[in-house]
Length: 108
Image (cartoon, rainbow, N blue to C red; front, side, top):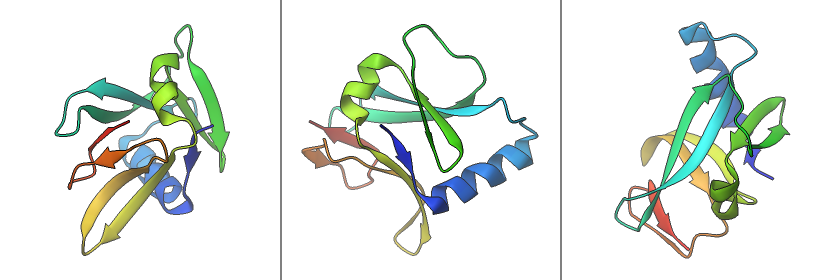
């Protein structure tokens, strides 16, 4: 399962409204090679499911990932911070053995 915090859900709803996206849009999360630690998170809005997608729903928000990425993302929570130490979406990933200082890449 992939989870979303209440704060991240509120920010996603705000971004969807600002972009004029309908209820058929969901969050697509994937893992790609790169970044200081070897793997990076990628997140976007999408409205078309692909063969092999893993679909989850938390707090009324649909979260979708491909099967390969799910192997890295299992039990991860999408969070959002707007504090002094940084602003933006963050992934709380219990599978990561290390993360870079900016939090945008990780290793397992």
